[in-house]
Image (cartoon, rainbow, N blue to C red; front, side, top):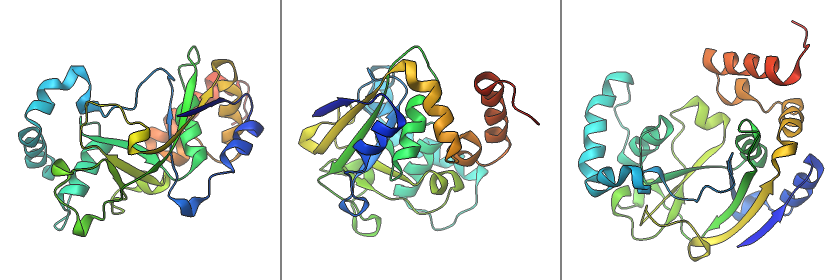
Length: 225
């Protein structure tokens, strides 16, 4: 895996510019560069959920229908929806927008280096023709239907993992890593805000607005109402 360190917004722009959108590149930002690329359900804390994954997922679906209305949603979208709302699944969140990925690498935890991963997977799952997401035989990616405004705003895409407890690596596709030093995180947050990338735009609604105002109070200091 190729690894580089970027020290400014300009360096990040120059590095990311080499990835053409039509070549299936996707991006993932993490606020801690030491975290491995392992889906939540594959981490040690959730080993019992992984052991009985199908029952775990079915139990979530039975209760989740009380909170949304969609008659034709399939299990790929159910799984994406579950991941989107915090359930431990075999999915990892990615985006087609490298600025969105950078946001998730720098928006908090200013005492740790962040990271942006860039990935071109070997395999693509098309929902209508794919096996059940819990029975995939290769780690690949899929793009969910537009059932969530947040996923649309964040240009969300997911990888689905054949073996969730194993770290994503070069065996699954071409993978690059860009370290974001902790000391430039606050400045990059301000740079991204200048381009309209912030909590308010990526998380539409009152929660996003409140988080954005809190960020302004803590980072910008002295902004005008």
